[in-house]
Length: 398
Ligand SMILES: *Cc1c(COP(=O)(O)O)cnc(C)c1O
Image (cartoon, rainbow, N blue to C red; front, side, top):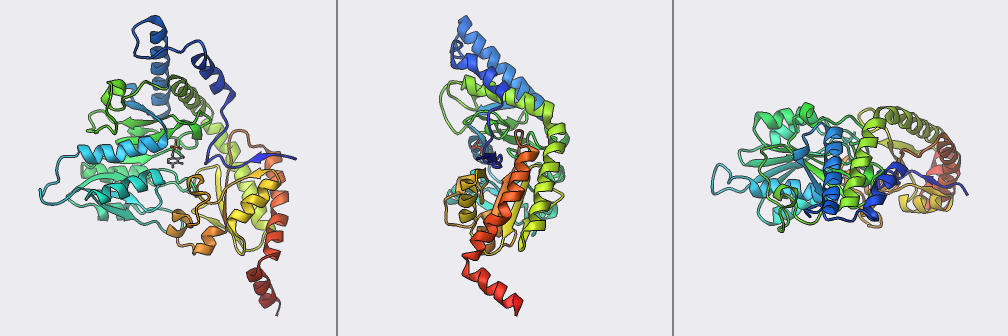
């Protein structure tokens, strides 16, 4: 049976070049990057090379890159680190305030919720039905006590892309630190922290054909940031703990590849995504695309299929060798409908009946042909089992 992986927004396969770069550091080059001897110094050199590779990908200075255990830790460090380091708000009796959005990844949302339990006020700026944030809404949400704005660049479920440079302008005008979760943007869209004018940016290796369990937070020079953990003086006192040398080397190699291939891959993947989408819409009735169809990452398509359960569809497609998802991987298995799909106004049923296809480096035209040919019958079969669907077909034919 053909195997087609269309779940790149959940995770990606390791690029062979990344495996090659990591291998020595999983075997003979086992040094601790803080050791003075030559084994240690070779590990240090590899970590610093990776830092340069990551910095180059996003237009940053090397010293501003903090390696973390992934996107989740980078988001936690950015949000909590800035809030905790912030000077007390202007009025001493009032609390600190954070502005974020309703469609953030749970790494940001749940950090904000934890801060709320500790007395921090949080405003969750809404999105429109296309999944886009109006920067003016961000401006209106600001108060004299706002100590952080955190708005993601590209959304993991819809692929929708926010006007980061515009929000950054608003943040700068008010001298409020601005963090963006760019985990789904890096490698898919041009990312340049200086052009955008943001202050902190999260990225993750395993979303760009690198290894799991490693990521980075870019922190603009001069930003006040309280660490999450306490220990040694690693990562300029921002993230203690012996460096994950093989992981960091893998992230560096993945970053370099992502930069070199981005423009070409974006065009290739977008054309495959658009073809898949239009073939599905042409063959499957009662199917609608979620999220803005222009302002989105080139690899993502989120489609609602009326009268079917997304989970049932994912399982039925898996039996045909096709891997895709409903909602986010982190909440797959949860009974709650996706917070992103309900935020754009879908009913719980609409949110439950949606699939996310996310393409990537190993996706081929043959993969797309196979999915486009296989999916309609799978949907039709599941719908035939649905009493709701039978009723609506009967009503339509009367
Ligand atoms: C995957 C993802 C994360 C979390 O990254 P991990 O490295 O898996 O912890 C954060 N934000 C977004 C938008 C993501 O897609």
